[in-house]
Image (cartoon, rainbow, N blue to C red; front, side):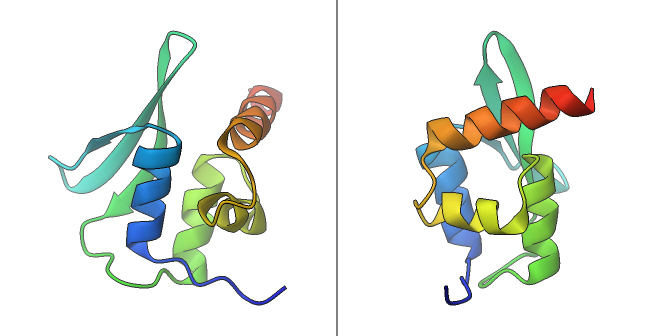
Length: 98
């Protein structure tokens, strides 16, 4: 499978559109919060300085926040993994690390 090139705008759309996360860009970073089963979770953190195409390090940072592998995160953003499936992976892995 060819390398996926994710743009900041793709990731922002995935958080706010697909995941319906709440965006907070009032501070030093842009945070995305997910309300899930009565609790609020920080699921994403972007720097205001990030523009254009994300590099591998940035993608890894974003993927780790969701307990996803880099490739899983990329597939979720480009719609090859559905959001309910991604949330199930996130929930299972989050619970196993606590």
